[in-house]
Every structure is written in C-alpha cells, then in structure tokens.
Image: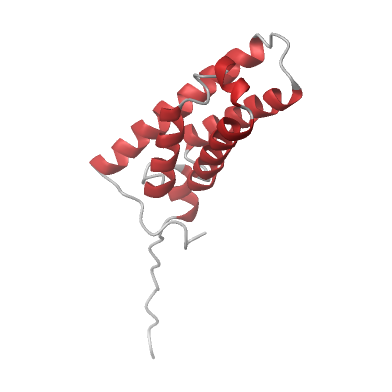
Length: 134
C-alpha cells in the first residue's frame, strides 16, 4: 500500500482534498440513498450499481481506500456510459460527467492527510531508544 501513497498533503491542500472527497462522496450517498428508498422498478444491474455508488460514497467520505474506489467509480461510470446509455437518462445525477472527472482527480491526487488512509498507511515516526553501554 505504501507504493500507492507517496505523500499525504497536509495543511490547506489536505483540507481542499477533504472538501473534494466530502462533496463527491455526499453526492453519491444522497443519490444512491434516494434510489434505494424509491426503487421504481429498477433492474438488478442498476440496483448493483446503486449499491456500488453507496459504498464508494461512504469510502470517499471516510477517506478509506480512496484511490482504489475513485478508480472503480470512474471505470463504472465510463462503462455505464459506454454499454448502457439508457441507464444514464434515469441516473444522470449519479453518473454525471463531473462525478467521473472528480473521481479521476481524486484518484490522481490521493486522499490527503485528513483520511483513514493517512491514518492506516501514512508515514510513521520511528523512535529508536538509546541503549546505555556499560
């Protein structure tokens, strides 16, 4: 995992990444929960897509496996546009072009210092105690 996360920006860049993650994650969570509450005769593939969006939105908000989930989100959105364009008419907010672009931006920039990824996979300060030689 260390290879994926070279740095975790802190300070204002870290806060900016947090705001970006929360914005896209909240959008995915709100749209997916709306589709879950009012299914309106959805097909199985669309229901799985809604569950995937709910999981990815949760992952974005928490900042857990952020780059992996952002890549999956961008690939899923592009695949739906490519293979099932009829689904995009009913889920335009969930699979909009700006959601895919922001997911790609998050995948390329990383989660930032204010995330579970930074907590679990970030750099650690190792303190080696001195040994008294007698």
